[in-house]
Image (cartoon, rainbow, N blue to C red; front, side, top):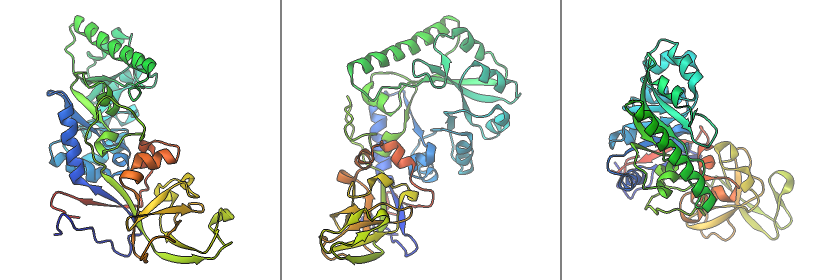
Length: 385
């Protein structure tokens, strides 16, 4: 066992890796729960390998600290969680072929009903399925139309479908623009109006949820049974410039790291990498890191549009990022040596939202694209790796 201050031992075959700080994850769960209403439950969104953090590591640890409700995008992600022995409700947010209804029952997964015809098809499979009804209140993606009260009512009477929840999704809850707030309030009002209509039809309402991460940050007054926490769970915003009503003390859970495997002296006028995109203006010392865009570090961060941290110093990316390698300028970094650790995503000036913004994207996409070939190393409260 290592002390909590110890760093993980990185062996020679670990060219690049993801570090997951479970201390920060536990902290974030506590902060998010405190921001919710007392009767509201945290629904941990762990789709896309828990936003690139490693679905097993994240879900298993959250089960340990009492989180028992999860959301995924696909049935295969749900099955994977069950094979990891994850307990509690697992809601599939996306489409599942009705032909796989037997697996929904076998693995005790909860399926989102995306419209009335889909619900009919699932019911005809003759498997007993738990489901949440999704309501389209203006995003116009998946869901029953908010005006389809009769069809939504009829689903509650289907023989093989047990309705456990009903929800909607807010498409501009991340914006505090006046018009976007107006639109969001229309979405919220129409959802609650539907619930009132269902009650008048003597439907016993199941659990409800409206807020995802930004719904909690900008509409914390809403009272539902769940908050679907995705990007906030991992301690980051989607963009570094996002303005929100709530300001929560969240901590980044993920760091992306590699190491220096080669140092090269590049003379003035010589180039580095494909297309000779970097030409030295003077003699330069270049470090090669064995990580590239196949690992999820965006290629459009090439040519000094980003930097990494080595020994506390900034090292700009020079030349074009390759599939498996990239080069950084370490000319001004003292005592540079092969084997030194390089952090590509971490906190402060290389926090995921900043890196994503520099690449012209959002944090969600950046993290989800982190490659499957990266090893995930975790630390818990005891400092174990």
